[in-house]
Image (cartoon, rainbow, N blue to C red):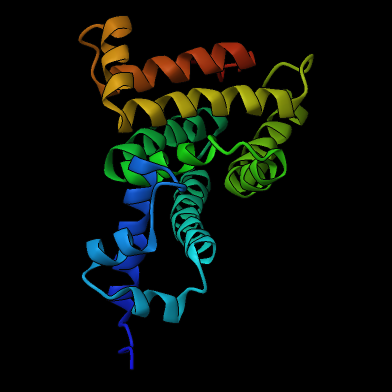
Length: 211
């Protein structure tokens, strides 16, 4: 009989699975690999997860809950659009540096050759950020704070692409090296300030009088 897992052990299984999927991809990661990395038997994993697809979906839910909480917390604490953008840029880079395996797993998913499956994954992964950024920029546009000649949805897509760049920089050595080629010795603070300044310019953000 398979022993019951503690919450800590179940989390360990998910974290190890995420690391393996992020480094190897879904197809080349097996349940046996995950079991060995987690110090449990294959049978124990199958007791909780019907198959690799079920386990993978649990990994995705686990990581997206963490990412969602990070984004929503940064947005809730912001005092203005400019402040919110800077907070989001900061947490994007920090999240990638502290949890590179999560970001790598998301990008491993982009290698799927099934268009329907890719669309499902894209909707799940992007849902929170797309909703939050769209709402943020729609409010700013209605308040006359940013340019009105471009759809707020397109503006939020462009802003998210800047944050994706920070994700990549924070979790892959190649993109960190690429950053150094372009930015020289600029540190994280200078990078974040520059990205936010670029975004503000693109949005046509009007600075408060007196600044």
